Image (cartoon, rainbow, N blue to C red; front, side):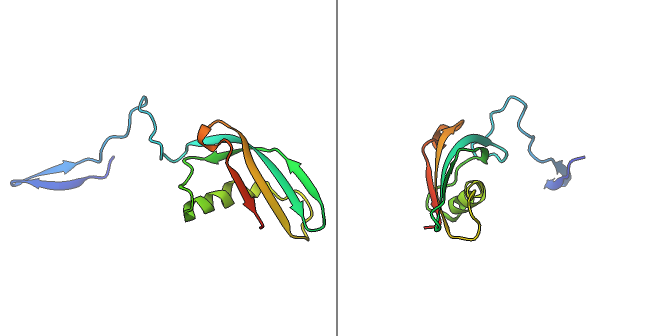
Amino acid sequence: MYPTATIEVGVTRVPQLPPPAAGPHAAPAPTSPGLNATVRLRIENRYADGAETVTTPVVTVPLPLPVEDTTEREDWEWEHILGHSGTGPTNVHGWYDIKIIESTAPELLGLTFDFGY
């Protein structure tokens, strides 16, 4: 059963149902939660002791990409990109240069990220 609200029309009370959900053929809105992209990252891991490694993991990231220079964008990068770096020593400072080199979402292709600088 749906939650209802009651509105008064004259002296008659009429229950008001929530708006219907989108049908099965409706296109998802661009900001719909649950949309994802599959990307391949090129990660250059550099460490203060001179160690360097390059990895190219394939990962899933949520869409849409938040607007640049916002807290939401910074959070997105830390939560969904940085966590795939750091394959070298754990007891020294590291720098990570990351680029999206393949993507199922064209707007992500070629984006670069740097951490630790």
